[in-house]
Structure formats: C-alpha cells, structure tokens
Length: 231
Image (cartoon, rainbow, N blue to C red; front, side, top):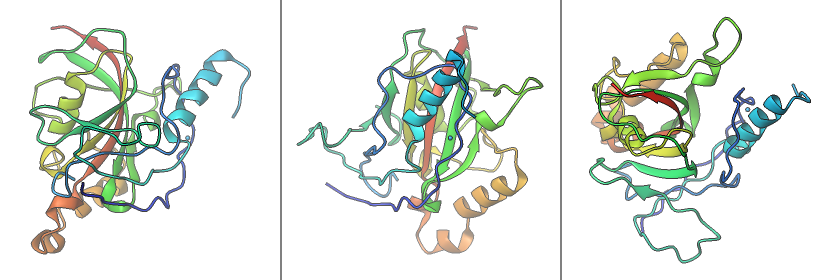
C-alpha cells in the first residue's frame, strides 16, 4: 500500500447556505484512498438554516483531512478508515459517497446542476472555488450547470457525476490527468486571483520540468448533484 500524507493546516470554510443535510455524512476526520502519487463553513431558529448548518458541519468540520491513499479494496479496520473506491474506466478518479441520492441517474447529454467545493491538494487543500460563494439577487447560492458529456468540464467531475443520483453528495479525488488540462476547462473560478493561483500552480513550467506534474494538479471536490434535466 502506498501512503501519502498531506498536512491539514487549513482553516475551516464558512458555513454554506444549503437546504439539505446528509443522512449518512462521514465523520470530521475522513481518510481518502488513491492508488499512487501518479494518480494523485449566523445561527437561526428556522429549520432551513439548521439543515444548512448541519450539511456544512458534516462536510467541513475539519478544514482538510490528512490523506491516506490506498489501492487495496479490503479494509483491515472499517471502523478506523473510510475507503475511497476507484471509478471504472475513469483514469484513476476515486470517490467516497457522503450521502446517497434517491433521484435519477444522469446520462450523457443531460443538463445537470451541481454544488461543489473545489480544493487543490498541492496547496494543502486550499479551496479555490465554491458554488456556495456564487449568489443570486436573493443571496441564494447558484449551482454550476453543464451538459454531461460535452467535454467542457474536467473529466474527473464528469466521471463522478455520471454515476451519482440526484440528492447525492460525493467526495472526489481527481488525478492530474483527469483534472485541468487547459485554463479554459470548467469549472473556472470567477475570482481572478484564485484563478491565477490555481493555474499558475497546476501549469508551473519549472515544477513540471522537475517532474512534479503527477502531483501539482490533484484536485479534491465535494459535489452534490442538485438536479438534472433529461434531453
């Protein structure tokens, strides 16, 4: 078993405003699996606010957990660690379901809407983007909408969403080969400085020349499949 440990000195993000709470969310100290380094958030008495807070705490009560990558399907202690599984034919994308959905499963061509937190492993789990920060005129978070299979979104997200059900929440570890291959691939952080920091890290020519390409672009996304529209 190959073990890679990442430090967790990242502050917890603010509570996201979200209407649902997972029924089977994982504990704060989540362990992540991967095959190798090459595949590398004000209180209110309303029920709606309480549910939003519950979702946030379940996903991010710690800033970013220590990552333990393992390709073994068997767990010697299931109570001690939560195993990620690799999606078939995904190029090394690994997922852990935080909440199982009960709705439809999307297929290529469908319009899907997701909420996500995006983090960069090479920056100690730095959060470079979140749909919960994208607000409409009423202050509600705007989901990210795309057509599944269009090729405009990074492959790792498409692979993860393709096998989800509406209402599900999934943590996804995306190796560089299935992450950003260019600065035009979505989702693109709307904040200029976050965008620059993300891409100058992933596409750093000096570090790439030094053979660090297998680790620079590893991404961690927490994704909720909010809705879909069959085409």
